[in-house]
Image 1: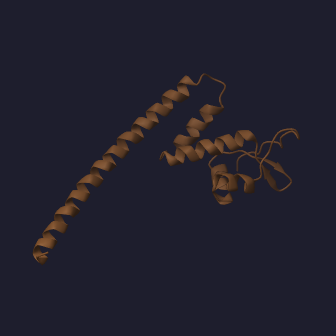
Image 2: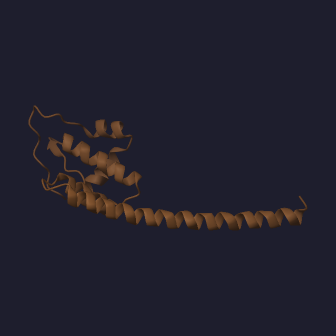
Image 3: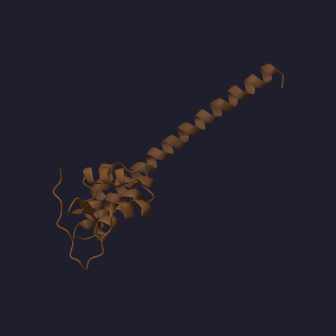
Length: 133
């Protein structure tokens, strides 16, 4: 189990798991899963998880990556780079590489779908001809 960060200072904005789940329209279980994957590292206040603005941003980036079809490991790599104090150039290059790979995969899937739809259309045409419609 990953080590938990200390509870943020009282002046820092924090969020509960329920608040983040409602804001991003996901389940608390999904948030806990992202924690298990090392994407989020909430602090603890007693038995409750306490999320910082950093956690909220990481969750937002994670969900954006999921919408793009990225694997969680790819998302983690990018989000971890986002956290680093280094130049953004390596992160942007890595992101471009990942996007290019996903674009290629999606274009192949689109081609496969178009071929399958054409085959379906031919079968439908033959069936209609046999039925005399």
